[in-house]
Image (cartoon, rainbow, N blue to C red; front, side):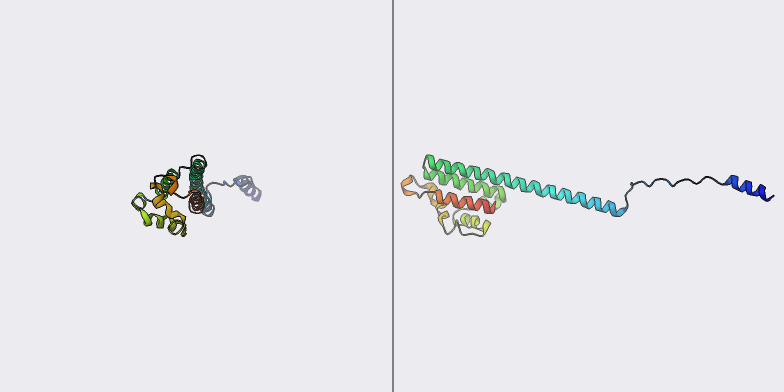
Length: 162
C-alpha cells in the first residue's frame, strides 16, 4: 500500500519548470523617475540651445549691418547718414531685446543712459556716444566728427551686451 500511495503522490507531481523571464517593462519607479528627469533635462538643454542660437544669429545679423555701415563710411563719407543709420540700428536692437513700452519713448540723455545701463558702461552718455543726439541732424560732413570711433564703440557694446 505504501507503494500505491507513493505512486499516486508521484503522479500528482509536476516537472520542475524554469521561472518566467522577467520583463523590463513596467519599469521600477526609480528608473521611471530617472527617465523623466533625464527627459526634462534634455528638453531644458534643447530650449537653452535654441535661445543661445537665436541670440548668436541676431548678434551676427546686427554685426553684419554694422559692418555695412563701416563699408558705407569708407565709400561715401556721408557722416550724418551714417549717424542716422547707427541711431536706427541701436533703436532696433533695443526694441528687439526689450518691451516696446519701455524703450520707444526714450530720447536724449534718457536714451543714452538706457544704452549705458545695458552693459553698465559710460560709453554713450559720457563719451563719443553723445554724438548720437546731434550728429544725425547736421547738414554736412564739415560739422560732423568722423563716426568711425562711435562705430567701434557700438561694435564693442553689441559684442558685450547683445
